[in-house]
Length: 207
Image (cartoon, rainbow, N blue to C red; front, side):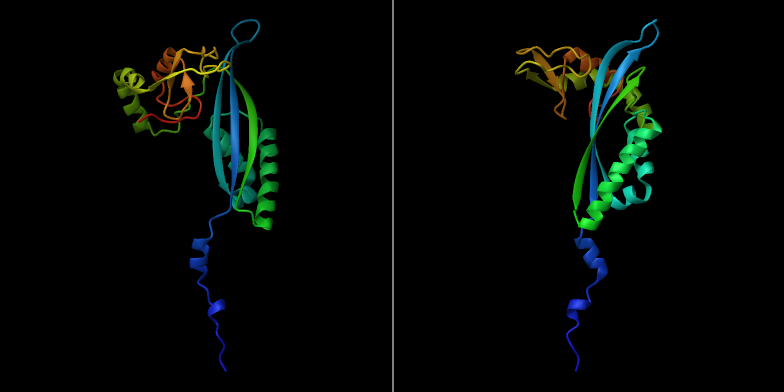
């Protein structure tokens, strides 16, 4: 007498397609502290905050957490000590193992780091050489047009600073809003876009 084997003859490929790969999100907020070391006493020139959410398959963090975390810091141009990489990787490993064994699909951990640097990091280094050459050729002729096309907003409320110069965005004054919703003084973002057509906060690239 033959039984019904339909319940035990599932196609593993179809089942794997229906189950999303479990991921761990690392929300990394880096504060770049720009310091002038030319004088007798180092002087802080300003700060820029970069805030990015990175997504990793659990197995990547379990099998090579140090490598994955090191690549994450490198992608954001954050200089860190090996001990910091190991600390973040160890925490990510514990969360990844717990998620894998417990069946959780998505988890998130938050990491904050301060990085003292001599100049503003070049967030555009991940472009190809060809893209960089084209961008350099186009920047001089398009930056003014790009800035003009950015949204102008009225600053509401006090206590908000321009991420580039760190000076206050005065309540009631006009500021420039990037498509990624970060807000700057008009002269500050125009000067920035003369160098790189990316948001200095989140690396959003202007088309």
